[in-house]
Length: 206
Image (cartoon, rainbow, N blue to C red; front, side, top):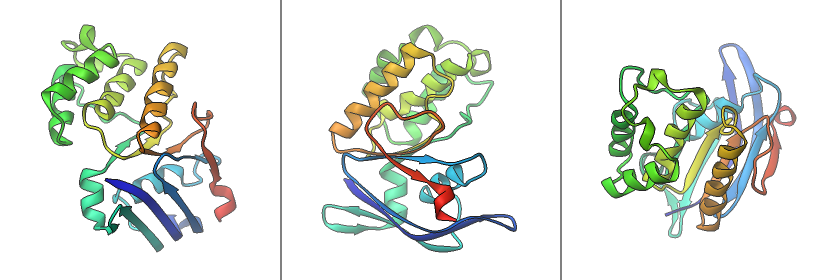
């Protein structure tokens, strides 16, 4: 199980513009960190770099389990979830088809599918095409894979933004349980996370 994430001397650019440089921090089991900063500071880019979708200009992203350093590809394939600001759902698929695809893609099970549907109250939505869902419903559908296929590191981009007060409460419960079980959360936020979290202001990393 992934137990630690270490970022050392990380620098990222977008086109010709340097987003930040020299960023270093570590995240251990049971910890959460909130990425703050103005729009364009590089919060989303950092999440994507940890997930392996962006190559840093400099620095390193290192994953550890109980036995030491993990192969980055293995960690990214089996030990993390990236939940983007945009859901990335196929509009012509039903919620059932989309969740089924996601659960299968990340190695979940039918039991996990059922648990996610129950926890996020998705049963009334399953036969609707995702394009017909509200923003909050789409976010619940995306959150479901965190329940359906547990993984140690959650990379979350504005996870609470489309949710109403009641569903923010459910999201808070999911995060609390995840951390209590030894999970980790790295989240790009404007609103504070509903769990204890270190704040990492990317403006200060320039």
